[in-house]
Image (cartoon, rainbow, N blue to C red):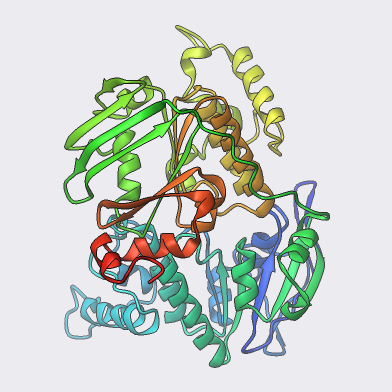
Length: 503
């Protein structure tokens, strides 16, 4: 790619970008949200038209005016925001638009058997994961859906594969399997562009890293010459203070008391306390029950038995209305699907959970705007004001708006599911500061995350779940990532037989 430019209205999104990818190379592409990474990759995949510059593949100039043109040129892209048909099964999604046909049945020509056999081969043999290929993908976990996206790209036998945040939704074992697959693709001569905010992971996978800032290339270096600090410095144009702010001491009195909470098929006999001002983490693999627990406490999936107390008073959470009435707040992992209202403005998205404070019988637009402007300024949200479309914001700024929505309710319990998924290093630091500020004000915080380093850096204590039960609760400041990882894959009695986690 030579001299690539792209404008959106008066905004110059890309300013003369040059990118070279060699066969058998894994090129890392990093930058803050809004730096131009996704725009550049969409141009390469044919989803966006470039305004200037040239693209050559295997020495020949190409015109990539559509995604089909990109695919025909041997380019496959795995988007961070998954592009699956929710009512199709895995096999139908992998081969959508390229379905094998049967010649013997004119009225039902699709060869579903062949599709499912090939889908199983890709998922099990190529990626080493066991994903049901005949169930609608809406019923599958986020990590399973991510693996289906990857299998779809592999099925096209592309020579150039773009992976946009491919491990954000994956657990540790799945990440390792994906990295092994990338190494295999690299050995077979494929060129891979790896876009990620996980800089340490990226440095372990890639041979070269290219950094974008404000639509321009500011670094293109071998990983041998880089470390995390150098990459972050290039991304933001300076140094970043400590990623995790100092922990604020929690109060001694419990605000949330959970006893014997059970939801058949998801979790069983869950008990824990969270003090006022405490940030309590929950670790565990996909399917361990950690996300189901948050959703049960928010009334999305009502628990079957057990008790929940808030400030010593037993409460009954039957639905989300009950949860909000008790001043529970919940930020889901899938921001685009469950968090934002994409057809509405920033101000609308910020105020939707707080209509009671913005008017009684009718909404007071002036009050809504005043509140929105105040929070946008206080949180450093980069946008064109309350009237800007929420979809025009970067992932990190959308996440801050989602947090602001719930902080405005002055919650007693703030529940966060993967709070920094898909946001850059600076935005992560800002989100952590907001969470710490809420805790300092006396809010109890529950954090579910697949990132053990995040849990240990942000939280006071961390509970680990395995097959629907809490296996241990550790002090975050005195624990290691390996401790959480080991308790996530083995029941407590197995660890005892091994001589403990250090045995």
